[in-house]
Amino acid sequence: MTPEVTLRSAALASPDALLDAAGLRDGVAARLPDPLDAIDGVAPAMVLEPSSPEAAAAVLAWASRERLSVVLRGNGTKLGWGRPPTAVDLIVSMRRLSRTLAHRHDDLTATVEAGATLEGLNVELARHGQRLPVESAFREATIGGIIATNDAGPLRHRYGTARDLLIGISLATTDGRLVKAGGNVVKNVAGYDLGKLMSGSFGSLAAIVSATFKLAPLPASSTTLVGRFGGAVELARAVSMVVASQLEPTVCDVEVFAPAGALPIYRLLLQFASAPSAVAVQTEAARSLMAADEVLVVSGGEEADVWRHHSRAIWDAPGAIARTSWMPASLPAVLARLDRISRLGASVDFVGRGGVGAGLIRIDAASEVQAAAITGLRTEAEVFAHVVVLRAEAQLKTSIDVWKMPGDSAALLVALKHAFDPNGILNAGRGPI
Image 1 (cartoon, rainbow, N blue to C red):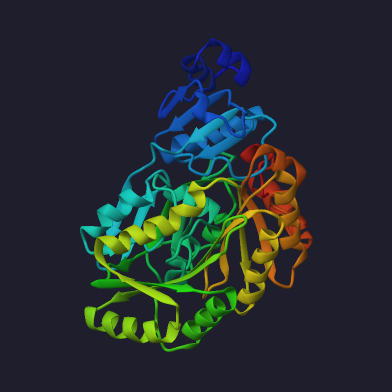
Image 2 (image 1 turned 135 degrees about the horizontal axis):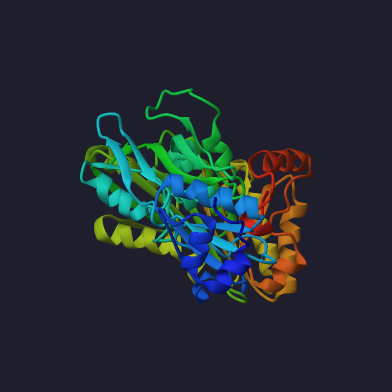
């Protein structure tokens, strides 16, 4: 029988001693942490890397028995999101679970392990003229991390988030079980919709070990229009005109760059991706409809550069970043709030899905100004449905609740947490559950 062991006593010996004492030698690698493993300055005692779903389940079962706090991680691109942890016993990395398990070309579906990167998966799918139409601003983002954080990019306008494309999921739970829901085909109603439940759970309920998605064909042609406007009113009017028209853009994104003390820049980015003739017709119609001060039309490599910069610019600049949502018709009110934040002396950037009503706001200012700006967003409940602070310095995280979950969902979230993780080991109190 495997002797009882505590993490701390085993860790004082060595990673190998921990694996032996915990009975995790098969299929699990262990190492001591390095500086990059720290979460908001808090270092874990050990990093474990299971190489199979069964090994991942065994790690979680052992950690639950030992009451060890666990943070699940892919490539760590969003490790700083959430509340600061008080202590982290284990990081359980899913990087070794990185295989594409199945690609059903004719059915336009694929099953992939959680540690695979989105970029790598799409390179593989592109050989067959297909893609998973989900984006992340982070090049190394993994499939499991994208689902867990409900990460999405400009293609959300046409395809939704990973949550909307998910048709099956496999989980490792804290009682050591492997649980599956959904299936391998698009028309499937097998089991509970655990995929949607895990989307946005931030690793607080279970470990995602694999997922099945519906795919989309690669478009034969694409063109992007970048329209620049003189003010918020003109930008909001252009978005409204495009959304109400017969145009079918793949992407309809808005940008606002408002450096402190400078005039804001307002832009609308429309992408059309389809057959070349359809793209040409819609591009010309959209250019006329936008009524922008300036319109740049790009395709090919230049187009790819535009979208790469669009996705990364807000993350490459300093400051706190909040994710929020709104009714698309409320875009004028959203833009007005950005102007009020700018008047506080902050540098403000905004990138959002104009036709969907979801996006990111970057606020670069002193922490008290950032806190006041976030609080202001949350007080306008009639405009902003929910405001979550993703990136922030420690001082801001200690002065406001980064999640601020709606009060009417608190009891349900507590019940879900207890059902999936009764010993409360997952995510080290970082939230949202």
